[in-house]
Amino acid sequence: MSTPHTTARARVRKAVVPAAGLGTRFLPATKATPKEMLPVVDKPAIQYVVEEAAAAGLDDVLMVTGRHKRAIEDHFDHAFELEQALAAKGDTVRLDAVRDPARLADIHHIRQGDPLGLGHAVLCARQHVGDQPFAVLLGDDLIDPRETLLSRMLDVRDRYAGSVVALMEVPPEQVHLYGCAAVAPSGEGEDDVVRVTGLVEKPDRAHAPSRYAVIGRYVLDPAVFDVLDRTAPGRGGEIQLTDALARLAATGTVHGVIFSGRRYDTGDKADYLRTVVRLACERPDLGPEFIGWLKTFVAGLERGEPWREGRKAA
Image (tube, rainbow, N blue to C red):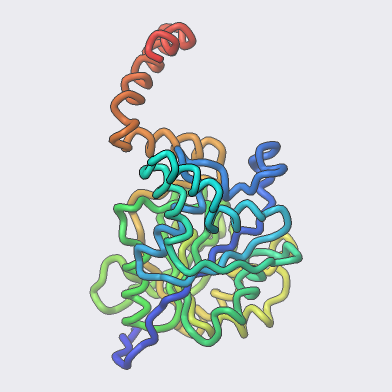
């Protein structure tokens, strides 16, 4: 049975956002543009992630980037010429939108260098993080701003110490796409909190320990660095964070928060399109007009005239 820790814990202030991937699933769009900078309505995907971290009180964010990722650094920096031009026009709405990314948190950047996997990207943050617990947020997973998943994970970390992963139940045919967790009750009567007893990276359906998939949110104890340092390359020849967490889980120091809220996977083309549509529909400045067009467009599809109907509603 897991026992909650009652001693004072260091407040988690730092977040690490791995952003060094090549974005091969979105080629050719990502040939010269980082996949993290692909727009979701009118903000790049990675801005939603940093906003989530800031909303949970994480005011120190380290971006782990790679070559050809300079656009990420520029986005979270000040653009003086653009800001001056907007200020001269009196366009305060766009001026605030341009300034907001740089004001979200104290943002740092480091290059991963060799693309050796998520575990290696996390290991690159060791010097910046030091001996403090920290969060890791993957840019492909967007959590709806109305959800409080990260804050809940921080609460669980405060209660149990160790590391905390976000888990989501997925259909059996999708377990091979994720790291999957073997779980046991936490023993404290919290329905959304479990003890993680094992982890397997992208298992086939027959050998998955459960349908609980690890999604892209972690709150990690600094002990993970020593484990990662000793972790050999695994699946795909990369250093897998899942493998390191599996070793920590064997010591009883990993818990999971089961999440069933609104999550958007922008790492898949079809899900990326669905994400843009959903978020656009919910925007008060875009939703009413866009929903009206969408209804007309779908009606046109059903009649076999999508172009004509779409043109009428545009």
